[in-house]
Length: 328
Image (cartoon, rainbow, N blue to C red; front, side, top):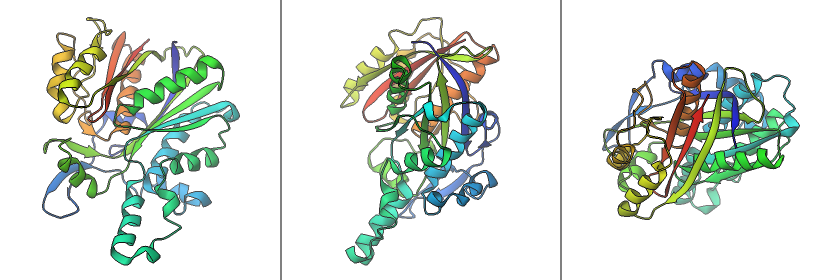
């Protein structure tokens, strides 16, 4: 089912709004939790006015940073369509790590201070669905709401859910959100799991796209989403990557979105298809936030007339692969 990408929203190290995806990103060297390794990371300015304004919302006074990223990205997308009936807008969000900062803080309270010191105020903010609950309440959204959890490729599952809702008339528009927040423990976990190479740049932020059935003049469309190419080890991953690319036309441009150990497998599967030129921030790994950003990048390129069709792969590093075909 062909859907229009009506609008979008971005929170990233480069700033706020879709233009930030193509600008200069702010980077920093951050030590991991144990202090024995430094890593290049791209962090959101958490003190920026665009985020601090949401502190006025009572629900967000104790919320994790990811909630601020999500609500700002979602609000950007909604503000571009001012006459939208928000009671008929659905929201589906894709998470990998979720509320990482508060989860680690709550865990430390238990392990270092004892069970009696674990804060009941912090605990609700460790739940995956908590940020999305804040978003829909603060923005007055009345449609269906769903949080999905997986690896990076969970973004493709979220897109497919939005397709189903729109096809069945469950909602008139659907916001699809992807977000990630950073904590130094993340670096230790990634290295321990062998998911990332030392040279990879970790990031945080959020992205939002608003999907609808109506035609948007001069805009981009989501033509097709393929997902569910699952794997349990690297041998199975090689087969899954090949299957994921099978239905992509040979003359279709492909975004080079692979990271870590997935890069050589993805390069082999892409084959002779044309790979889009590198842009600032494209190699930053922020899980589902990166997937959202890459989808928005594709939509902008299509709207400008740079391409007719763009395939945007979502290479999960632990579970599955997915891909979206976008066009004009």
